[in-house]
Amino acid sequence: MRITGRVFKRRKSEFGALSLSKAMSKKAARDPALPGVLVFGFEGPYGICKAHVEELQKHFTLITMKQFLENKTEFSQKIQAIYLWGGRPVIDRELLLSLPCLKIIGNSGAGLDHLDLPFIASCGVKVAHTPHAVSTPTADLGMALLLASARRVVEGCQLAVSPDTKHFSINWLGQEVSGATLGIIGMGTIGYKIAQRAKAFEMKILYHNRNRRRLEEEAAVGAAYCARLEDLLQHSDFVMLAASLTPQTQGLIGRRELQLMKRSAVLVNVGRGLLVDQNALVEALKNGVIKAAALDVTYPEPLPRDHPLLKLKNIIVTPHIGSATHQAKWQIMQDLVESILAALHGLPVPNEVLLK
Image (cartoon, rainbow, N blue to C red; front, side):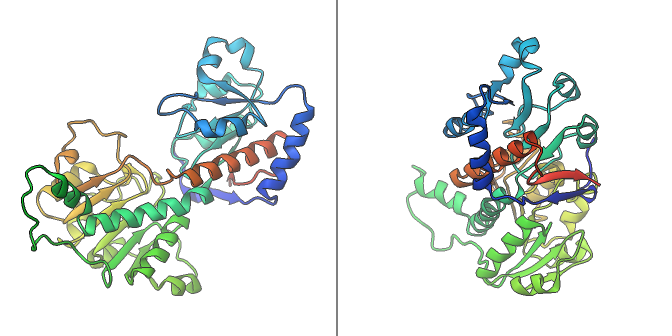
């Protein structure tokens, strides 16, 4: 079951990350046994960052999914938190019901569409996420994809290194972004940071959001609000998806919406793959309905190697790396440590996700 963003409010920390971590570490150091925290593992594409293990082990006893599954009797009573990294381990009802001492799930990243929040809450388990840690790098990547698509950077790189290239054509052209109109769909923290960056490139900014921003926030980035999505699509040279995935936003951009866009328009998605009808996008890119697309997110991830999107020249696809920087991942880890420690010690939980 997915829950819309309307039913949540996010609680910010009343404590500094460093002060709380220091206080809890001192307490933990006096304890003979650190609290057990379930992680997916230490190896492979879903393993937690190796550079973080030493820091995590200052506060917790890390128990891998493999260890837990091999000896549920030993570990089920010890696990008090789940450290969710890249959506792993998968949180299902069977897992939740097998952890009677579970107090909190710490989710790396901002998105929550993979969690059954009402059921988790019914188990008396808290959820915390890390929206602030991921916003800056995701906004950076959104602009990087926009610029790369506009100037045909990936295509140009392939041409420049190809053994078949004998000459560089003076008529090999891209598109300028300065003076162009950017339409941002989803003007939350990430969307607003994208607008700040777009302003620096002298772009005109439109946005569509469930709730309108304050006038002073609009003025700060020169953004104009579009109550109707159709108006934004018709007037934008670049359309940037930065919205959360909810039942209301799934399939937000389909055949009809793509037809409304300019034939010269570029679609950029740093939100969630399911925001876009990918079959309609393939058709639009093949038939010149829009000029190009740049996607950091797809469904599934990765796409099957024979997927038609991967055969097109007018698309850039990256492997969901919006928050994939050393700095962001370290901050995510610190934020999760702070939230988990707070929950285990009965303190207000920073970045807690609350059902209204």
